[in-house]
Every structure is written in structure tokens, then in C-alpha cells.
Length: 270
Image (cartoon, rainbow, N blue to C red):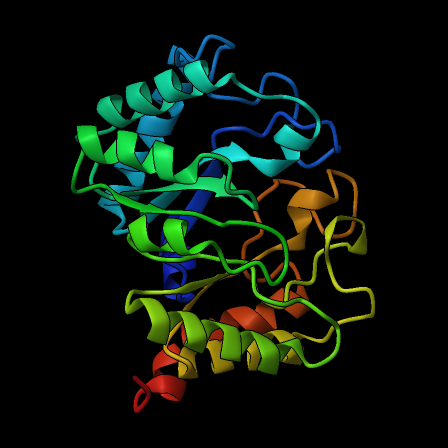
């Protein structure tokens, strides 16, 4: 059985991978060696080979990989490449991955440092590569300069506990109308731990479902956030095999079922 096919059957056809997972927050599978880059910006061959294997397997199963080049979590902990090294890394990775077309580059998770410069490097090597960015924390919708150069927008919408399912939809609609390009709500209404930006009050799966539905109505798309990656192995949120498949969490299963039946709910929406 292919895990990718299980996700696809539940309405999930894009999986996101971080090139930097080298923070010290005790996230699942995170650590100093969990990075694609050497300090000088060269690419780690063994990690690259694993990524290429994932891309090939995803392609066979009709799935897309969203590859996050740099991480705000690492930046905040001063785990950073210099500008020169990061330019080298972006250029090298773009060239090496050019044959793989089931791939989207997301410059940052929750940051915007030199997004325009990195996008220009990518486009100079692979003009057809789709590039996006998550520009910051909750409610940061990106600068005019950045939003103009990206192929689609992917901000973290408002996560305030007070009716975020309505506020976020208005943010997405604003971006769709202003920039006339696809907009993805990155990690909407997530259940994540409050320690790392999740809701301060208890959440219901219904909150998440209404939020997603309103984003769809506003003409946007969503990236579904699972809380397991921020809690680490041994917590109730993490399956023993580390793969959050349907059937593990009643909370997430309700959202999975909703995603699986997307066409039932948005057939007549734009």
C-alpha cells in the first residue's frame, strides 16, 4: 500500500518537505544534521539522493512536493547560511532538480529575507519553476514587491482565536483580487501546540473545517497542518511509525473526511 495513495484518497496531493529541519526545538526528526546544505552552500549528496527518490515516487503516484528552502526556526536560532552561501545553495539546488517537474519551491517558512533575490536566481536557471513563499507569522500577507514576483502567494492567515475562520477568508479574498494569482492559506486554523503559534484555547475540528470551507469560498487553497511535527516522538500527537495517516487521530480524521469530499461542498464555487 502506498502512503501517498492513502493521502491522495483523502484529498491531499501535495506534501511539504523542509530543506532545513535543523532547529533545536525537539520537533519530530529535527536535529543538527537534518539539513540539505553544507555551511558553504554546497549540497549534501546523500540528502539530495533521498529527496530525488521521494520526488520520483511522488511523481509515480501523481503527487507534488512543496520544497521549503529555508526555515525561520533555524534563522531564529542563528543557524544560517551567509548571503553568498545561500545564493550558491539556491542556484545549485535549482539546477540539480530541474528535471523534476512535480516540484514547487517555497523560499521560506514564515520569513521574507531576500525572497525576491532568491526568486530571481531560481528563475534565471529554471524559468518555468513555480516559486512561492510564506512571508511571516499569522496575518502577515507579504510585501508588494514580493507578492508581485511570486507565482502564487502562500501566507499564514490570521490565527486569532476569535473567529479566525472569517477574518482569514477576507485576507485571502483581498490577495486574490489584488494580485490576480492563486493564493494558498498556509496552515489554516491549525491545532498546533500554543508553544509554537497554535491557538491558545482548545480547538474543534469544526473550527478547522469551517475555516477551510471559507477559504475555498474566497477562491483560495489550503495547506493542512498536522500538530505532530512540533511535539516530538512520545507525545499523543505522534503515531509510533511517525506517519499521520487517517485512522490515528479522531480530530484529524474529521478534517481528512472533509477534504476527501471537497467536490461535494465546493462544486458550485469558483
